Image (cartoon, helix red, strand yellow):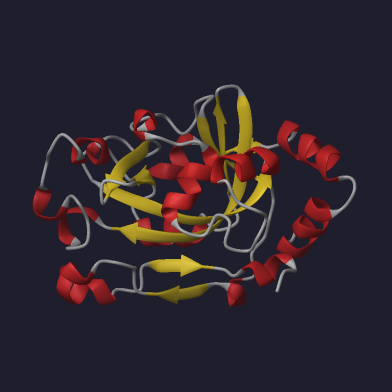
Length: 222
């Protein structure tokens, strides 16, 4: 299913039935997917996958539309640069396939996907999603109306999906948080690449093309 077809299903009268069908037939990403040693590849490949949560028994989710790669001990923008092992960063040193959730500026919860083998602190930050599951609940959590910017921004993503600090270091094959492949295909020509946001402190590494995103236009929106 291409991205535009996904959008047509979402906004049409049969969207609830479509979601139920897609959810029941979803393919949760295998544990081995997260062990890939190329975190930049994964950051790009995760575009089009669906990030889901079941918090308090409520199912919500959205297609991942923006990510950033963080390459561990050699990446000056990473929390683990220089092999810094702290109470916060210890989660990043686990085996790929778990969540890394931290507080930014004392306000926003940011959700990251730990990747690579145990002991190699790679992670992918999810910066934006296109809401597709439990949209009414997402709107309630966000306290906002449906708009293209509803879930654009990492703090908005966690708020929309109900992700908090207590969801740090959870398996991404759990019943609370997981990523699934619903067969949504993003055309490579629609993927934009650029430097990461808010990492000026990283010097030359701030210029690395480790951010990937697609606009809502690929889903038929303007």
